[in-house]
Amino acid sequence: MDLRSEKPGTSHPQHSTRAPSRRRFGLPALWLALATLAGGVLLSAFEREPLEVFKRRRAELMESVRDGIVVLFGQTPPEDIDYLPFRQTNDFYYLTGSEEPNVALLLVPSSSEGGTGREIFFLPLRDPAEERWTGPKIGAGDPGISEVTGFAEVMPPGHLPAQMGEALKRWNKIYTLTSGGEGGGNSSFLSRLRQLAPFASIENVAPEIAKLRSVKSAGEIDLIRKSTEATIEAHFAAMQAVRPGVYEYEIAALMKYEYERRGCERSAYPPIVGSGFNSTVLHYDKNRRRMEAGDMLVLDVGGEYSGYATDITRTLPVSGRFTKRQREIYEIVLGAQRAAIAAARPGASLRRSGPNSLHRIALEYLNEEGKKRVGEPLGKYFIHGIGHHVGLAVHDPSERSATLQPGMVITIEPGVYIPDEGLGVRIEDMILITEDGNEVMTRRLPRDPDEIEKIMAGGKRRGNR
Ligand code: GLY
Ligand code: MN
Ligand code: MN
Image (cartoon, protein in one colour):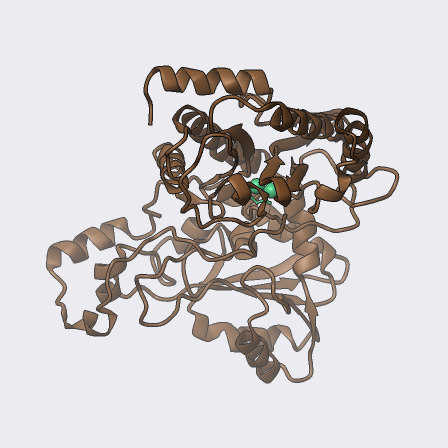
């Protein structure tokens, strides 16, 4: 399901609505000393892969982009609204590991044979008055800034036009993010680029970056495991707390608490806690209803850990026991998911059709087993895709036409939604594609209906709410 395009989240929440007056405040010497000591250190519990990993990604990008320069801009926080959360754009983070605002990147090929000639990171100078609000930051000009950022050349953003002009004496193509997507394609940046380089052609670099991002590094897989493990605990907690009379938002709050206390910075997408009719609404995220006995409940909830998302759905009976009808539909969806997971390996595809399509496998299962077991082919109620890539974004970019390869992380999430009965079922797991098949990263979280009933009963005995 396409639930969100990437939105900025936060890694450094800021607390003031008084931005315009901030420069009234003085700068005590102690703070200045602390800030100076902290200079060059990223003060964050954020787990970042080693800087060489980001450098290697830039080199790989320049292997595929040989006939022009690459210019990328990071996220720009809105001016004077400093209570809004800040989160780096994913493509920028992927290539630099930088969480700083207002940064830019220029990559220049060494020759059309491939290889990087120069790579320049544009980083604002430090502003001690600003740091009273934001905490210590890093800045171009800090001693040791090359070691801290992994870039031999670090300059303030004002140097970008001259450096670009220099590079364009040799190259007349600029690769950048030209359209929508992940924080790129901003039209004011594009028109600025056109002004700066009126004779250069401008091309979209998003497909090249997407290709790289779709195969995860060992470090990325490790971080996805962390968001997944924390979220599995949140789903266990929800299974024990769901019962008639509880509000959907109580479960959403409980789950957020459980993964955030395990280190997730935020939700990877707005939690979906949909009971009764809401279980049939794919993007339901209001979470305001009071759950009733006999409802189905779709819990599609996942946290983000050090920038990396997970995406997990379980469907529960609010009363703790599936009705006969609920169990029939649930078991058919589970069978469809198992069939698709069994076929998830290198060479399979997330497309809706074709010989290697996992979607087609699930759809055929829903139709055949539906006809056999409930007298109706159920494929018509499966109204979204079988899955998507997951990484820095919950819907990570990928090459649409590409087949699965080892190191890709995807979801497999068939669903059946019958609005007339207020009956929705979705089961969604995180799958790592391996050399010879796959690993279900979420296998620790039960899907079997008997096991789910058992966990729910355990929660009630302890009187959890
Ligand atoms: N939770 C978003 C999705 O399932 O695609
Ligand atoms: Mn999903
Ligand atoms: Mn989901």
